[in-house]
Length: 229
Image (tube, rainbow, N blue to C red):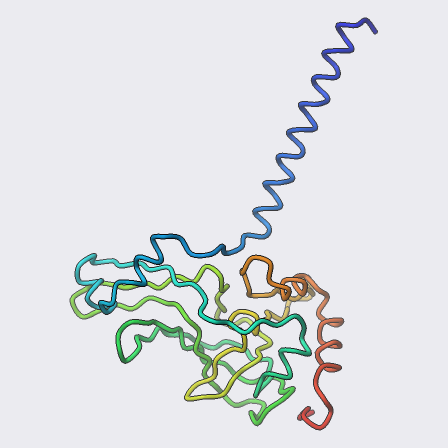
């Protein structure tokens, strides 16, 4: 192999390695898209005190990105279970977006059926409501307002979720998206999916964990006297 051939071969090798690294980085970014701190545009929107109805009337199809507000941080299932009033696996039956009384916020109210109670006073088979931030509402004049929460992966109808809940007028999740885990019901997929998309969130470590190992850790995290089973 002459010198020129060696040089060409080396150059091709370096180029292929660079392409491979680039593709690997792209795949990594696609696999774990996370929410970053708010932009100046979001801050400007927060300083606008008009109601969503007023903003929709002007824009016709108003869209707002909302960041998390003072979310409590957690690092483990044990921490979540300790802070929660209720720990339950439920299946989502339906959902509806709801405008707040002051018309400045939107929540999605999910109706779920309780499948398995680990903590709290819910009964298996009963329905309950969980309110999460975000959603879209349609006003009588045909205008719409949408509140996007890219840091919180939303639940889907007919899917099962483990929820760590705080009790109030309706249930809300502990730590926002940190209190939501999709539980697999498909035999071909046996891994848990986290719902937090907050950059650097320790709860992301539970993403793609085997469901048997995950539920075993959950049972160990809840004192027997508080476990309804």
